[in-house]
Structures are given as structure tokens and as C-alpha cells.
Image 1 (cartoon, rainbow, N blue to C red):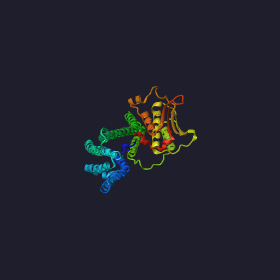
Image 2: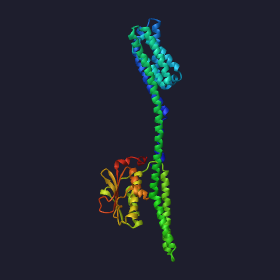
Image 3: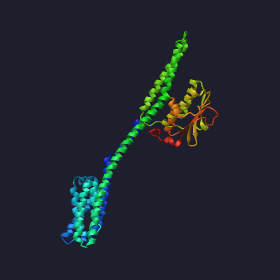
Image 4: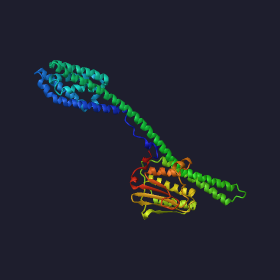
Length: 428
């Protein structure tokens, strides 16, 4: 990637918000269950209520409990904080629900509404709230059973069932709350670790990119400047220096220095380039032809550039073009420095669903058993840079003899479908 800023992960939401939303979802499920049970049991409660004042009280209890459950189910974000700050509201709701329980009886579905109260208290208030409301709801259930049931041993067993469920529900609510809190803390820690890893990977990717750019441009030019300066010093220190040769070598040093300055400026401009700005596709064929001609004029080694299968090379997005041009330039320079070649052939074009670039020389070839790790340890980073550039572009690179009897072939195969993906995203 060309900038560490592009590897920054989106800022995650704090873990507290994740916990709150999870608890909100659970509380809404509880209130939704309460609504269903109230609707089912309300007719039985109204039919069993005493005429007159009893019906009015039970009707008021139905309306209050239903509306409270509906409001909290529908708009928990607005009214939920009131329930969090004022546990007395839940206690009042419990008392209204007890009127329905007494009227409808403990054998109706309304009895299951009472189990929701300690579950909700555990989710909202923790284990203290769960213990308090489980005790309150259990006491109400025991009083209802003692008042309405008198069946001996069977009544005792039945009377202990729902209070036991209230205790279990309260424990489940507080346990779920603790799990959510711990999950939120773990999520926050994991997010922090992922952010640090992303930042570290971005730094490593940027360092590798800068190393490739320096190696492929400024470092090579400065090395040439040093060689030209050494030659100039040797010529000037001779007993009878040739003025024309001294001038020629001095001009070479000047040209190399200006080229190094231009490459440094291009590198700086690339670092500060606005990646969001639209860029026109590059003419890869024209650039490769120009660099091949420049290579021949500088080194005297005949080099040709021809299209593969006679098919014209289509325009290539600038990020891919930069990688392919850098690989081709590095392969040409390696031919000049290390291969002792007498000719170089460069082919580029479309082969099926691939954009293929191949540089072959008739030189001595790579030493047997050469690996990237050996080149890295020995300070030769050119081949390593080519491999990294190919990986950044989503291409496959092969370096070896290929189908030729001698020499070295560098072949890069880039799937055409990859041209629609930003190669910088591969380096994160």
C-alpha cells in the first residue's frame, strides 16, 4: 500500500455500546413475551374478577401492564434509562401484575409473566436486583397459592414450582448480563489488538514499498553517479589527462545527478499523491518501448520490444503499470549487470485471460539453488522487489530458464480481472 493512512481500520464502536445494544435486544424479547402472555390471559382475568370495583381494578391493571410492556418494547432507547434509574417502576409493575395473577389464577398463562420480572431484573440491575425481585415475585406467588389453593401435598408442590422458576430466571438474567459485560471487554481488547496489528502491517508494508522504490530508482542512479565520479577522478589524476574525456565524464556525472534528483522528486510526489484523484490508464506498450530503447542506448546491448501474438496491449491502470514497468526495468538492469548477455527480448500482450510480460536474455542465467532468502542475506534486493511487486499487483512471476535453452526469463502473468481491483489494497 502506498500510504499507512489507507491501512487504518475503521474506528470500531466502543464495547459499552455493543453491550448496551445486546442488553436492549434481550430486554425487548422479555417485554415481547410479556405482551403475548398478557393478551392471552387478560380475558380470563376479567371474567374471574368480581363485578364492579374488581373488574375496574383488573381492567386498570391490564391496561397499565400492557402499556408499560408495549412502550418499553417499542421505544426502549427512550424509556429504558428510566427503568434503569428507578427500580421502583419495576416494583410497581410487579404489583399491578399481581392483581392480574390473583384474578386470573396461578394456573393461567399469566403466571409465566411473573417469571419475566426476575429475568428482567437480572439483565438490568445485576445479581442484586435479580435476588430482590425474585424474592418479591416468589413471595407474591406463594401468597396467591396459599389463598387460592388448598389441595394438601399437591398444592405445596405446585406452589413451589413457579417461585423456583423465578429464582432460576433471576440467576439466568444476571448470568447473561455478566456474560455480555465480559464479552464486551473481550471484544474491546480484541479490537485494540487488531488495530495495533493493522498499524504494524501498514508500517511494514510502507517500509517495503519505500525500499522497493528506493532500490529501483534513486539507489541505482546514485550507484551510477559514484561509478562515474570514480572514473572522472581516475581520468583527472592521470599524468596527461585528456580534456575531452574529462569533460565527457563530468557531463555523465552531472546527468546522473540530475536523474537522481528527478527520481527523488518523483518518489516524493508519489508519496503525496492524492489517491482519490482519477488517473487515466497508462500506455504500457509505449513506456516499455521507450525504456527498452533507452536500455540499448545506455548499455549497447541490443534489446527488442514486441507485442505477444501480435495483439495490441490495452491501456493499463497506473498502479499496475508502475509495478510492471518497475519489474521490466529491474530485469533489464540485471541483464546488464550480472548476465553477460548479448541480447534481450521483451514481449508483452494478452494471452487468453492474462496480461503477460516476459523479459528473456541469452546470458549466463541464475546460479543453481538461488533463493530469495540467500539474495536477501547477501544484500541483493532486486529479485525480491520484483516478487513483492508482482504479489502487490495480484500477478504471478516466474524467474528461471523457462522454455529456453540458456539465459534467464522473467515472466509476469496478471489476470485481466485483477485490473479492476486497486493493487494497493493487497499490501495491507
